[in-house]
Image (cartoon, rainbow, N blue to C red; front, side, top):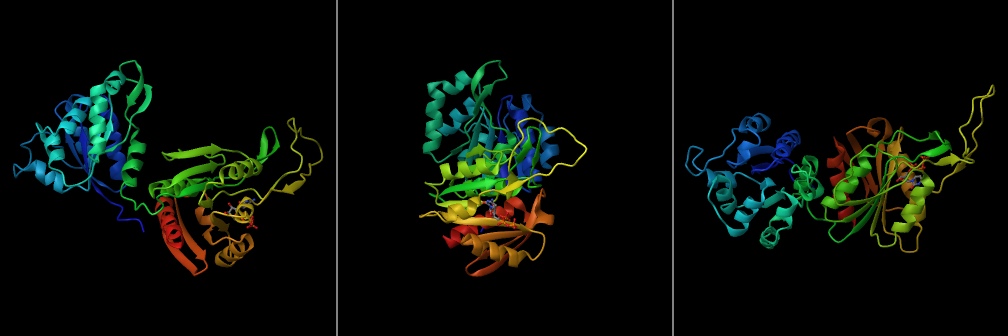
Length: 391
Ligand code: CTP
């Protein structure tokens, strides 16, 4: 099962323009239920004032080695943290970490730490490419420090290249993943998510209310659990979880083709998508014009992708989802048998579609197991833990 959600995070902010992103990160961490203690270097305070971080974290910001009552702030702070995240980490601060220097509060508490250290570098691309920086980064990796590598893009200095700090949302996801048990390490997981869209003509179609939230949460939870994840997604408005390879499709037939292309090396298939059961038999090439008589749409069945994968000669471990409006357990149980899959996850369509929360029933050969109402990510982690137990 997922471990206690709320963590004590020591956020170290060093001097760089990306310090403004650390303010947003503080807000997101607090919103996600974590406790955040901000420690800034002197240089960082030239970019964003401590008052900003104090207001966002609800805690006084520490900057000097001699802050705090005991004169031992560096020891107290590192003992009170589950993890230290340096974001942004300047080239200079990375060099100090690599060499074990301790000449201010932040570098001293990093040296005195008894918890994991994570680092989100941010710097100009020349500084990033400099062999000295690369040497220091290699040293940190060797020392067991988790690096959240920067992205490539436009930089504050006007240049374009590697060195942009990861966005706050991504850092939150990376950080939370550190605390999840790696129960799917070595597994390859294929997830389908979202609705499919079956075109009637070039501007109209048949779809459903699936938002993709549960499927995306499952993909994220599988990656957090150490799996290599491919996500085949219908049209959604969601941000992709990091480290997940995404394939975007529109119709059920496109989803089927993508699944069959990707399925071979997969050990687990989690079919969360709300696949349209039918498509329009003949899609009009031009926009249909209004006439006096209402048109009749002839529908034809779509392939059942999950049943098809479950019927492969060497199927992966198959998990289905069943959104039902009534007789939840009975309908889900029947689907599990009909599709010949070891596990089906049932939810009430009215409560789940488009919502951030849901409640689930997991049905396998041992019986039914209720997961009470919670955020979809929390439920997704429980589903992943259950799959790992069954495997
Ligand atoms: N599914 C699929 N391909 C389809 C239809 C469904 O892979 N063409 C998968 C879904 O991703 C889900 C499971 O099958 O994991 C259950 O889908 P659902 O549509 O609820 O089941 P149906 O068999 O279509 O039953 P009904 O629509 O009658 O409820």
